[in-house]
Amino acid sequence: MAQITKETDKQFPEDILFEVVSRLPAKSVGRFTTVSKSWYAFIRSPAFIASHLNRSIARNVDGDSSLYLLYMSNNLGEHSICTVLCDNMVSFDEVHEVELPMDFESKTCRLVGSCNGLVCLTDDHCAFHGRIMYVWNPLLRKFKCIIGTCCCNRLYKKFTEVSVGFWYDGAKSDYKLIRIMHFEKLDFAGCVKEQYHVEVYSLNAGYWRKIDDAKLPGIIKYSHQSAFVDGALIWRAGYSLGSEIDTDFILSFDTRSELFQRMEFPDFQEYRSTQEVPYLVVYKGCLAFFVAPDCGAIGSAVWSIWVMKKFGVVESWVKEYSEETPGKALWPLGFTKNNEILIDTSHGGIIAFNFETKQTKILNIYSYNNCWINYTESLVFLEEKNELVENRSSLEGHRTSIKEENASG
Picture 1 (cartoon, rainbow, N blue to C red):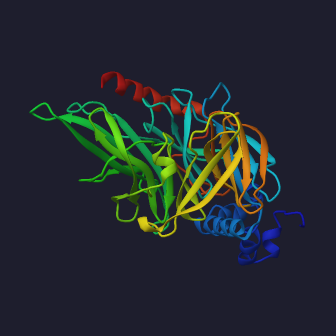
Picture 2: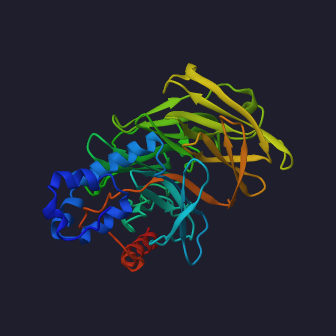
Picture 3: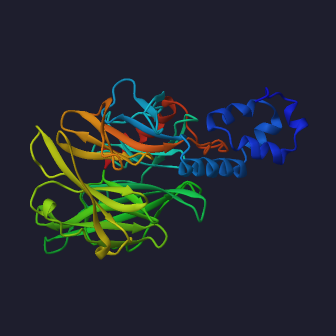
């Protein structure tokens, strides 16, 4: 490619530059904003950013190696490092490392989700989970800090369960978050009554909106296990029976109607006969779950993947795979575009199992307490001028106000 200069935009019409530059990698395009004021303007325009993102997503579908796997340790030290791996058809080469520009109160974090090059994170500790949420673009090293509403109400006890989710609303070109807070209220007879507080945050609007009269058919049991399928956020849920939670089912939140719905797991024997839990995943655009019955930490293990072929239809559950791999399979980390599943195992390593070749590959990556997501680089946030934070010092005011609120609550 010829060297780009300040005179380049005088030699080519803007529509041609738009078409050419929108096909280039996001990292390269970001540098081109320094070419000239006109380049700076059209690259930062919402139309260009959307076009570039759509082309990047299309290349991922067509098999181009522009999709990445992003992983980081759940337990953060002094230097919080996030590693980006290239999800190509052969290996998982390290592309680069990015230091997290935000702090977490408990020094632990959780990846809530990722879409369109944005990553959502929150504190993993139950006392801080969902209290502060960050929407971060690792490529641009910019993020938004989103403070949740008060987690304590003088009329009630503190919220006992907080679950969060993150998605893109394509109809409104908006990124949204949800917080689901469960609490117990004592009625006049002294009986415990379960109640919920559900609110949605819009990045476009910049504030939280409560969903009035939200009706949940159960309690989210494993908030770290979530999926996004067919416009719905998915969690594992159950009923509260005294001081314990029992009866597994799937809780979905339709992001378009903002209604909750219960869906059932299939009655599969290998799960019902063990204490192992199903891990919700998305496989080829369908809701699925991974289950590995406990067979000890030594030797091989058989695990299964069930797929809901038609979303919301219990009868469409199909046992798609039942495979055997070395070591006990603990939980799935995700899927690659090479039709592989990444599995964390009992020996602390990660294996990649290929569904087509039936071959198992051991990755040279230590997996203890790691968080993994699929990630696509994008220029989202490049056009933003306000409310972006780029260093830790800018968060001190947020954390101070939260500490004061918790102390007074």
